[in-house]
Length: 86
Image (cartoon, rainbow, N blue to C red; front, side, top):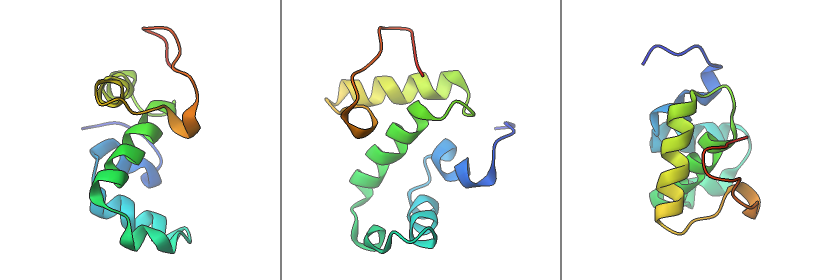
């Protein structure tokens, strides 16, 4: 993928659980060491939806992934109308 985004978002774009876990630990979230891969995957999809520097198509895919599994938007925010993202 050839997208220009800050390096800190690469793990989220790639849905790389190991890199995301390491980034969280480096940011001071020590609990990320013991967080399940499933929870981190959900978190990455939630972050993907919200970050406007990430291509729209990836954000849309993550929205659909979350909604199809009954997950909420970041911090429980309501979903915007279909076709609209932050």
